Image (cartoon, rainbow, N blue to C red):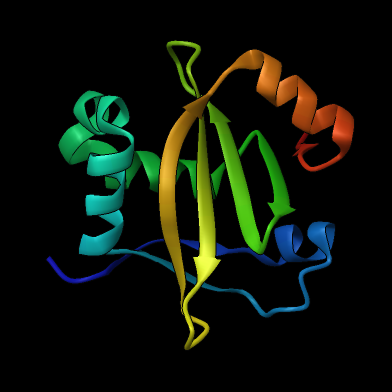
Length: 122
C-alpha cells in the first residue's frame, strides 16, 4: 500500500491552534502503519484493518486538539470509552502524515487539558 489520504487539516483547527499553514490533506502510509504495529501493538491488534477509517473519523470529528512538539494532536473518545490520540507531523517536504496512534489514560487527558496543550472542541 502506498500512502492514502485519511483526512484533512481543516481551517478551523488551523485557526484555533494558530498553526500558520493552509488546509491540506493528511496521509497514512506503510511506515506509519509499521510504526503503530511495532510501538503500539495492542492498538494495532484492536483496530487492525479498520485503523485507517478510525483515524479518518478522528481527524474529521476530534473531541480534543492540540499542538505539541511540532505535532498536531487529535484526540477522540471511542465508543468503548478508550481515548485515542493521533499525532500528525509534517515530513521534510511539508507533507502531513499521521505519525502514530495510541491510547491515553483519562488522567493524561486531564493533565493535557489543565496544561492547555489540548483544547476541548464543542
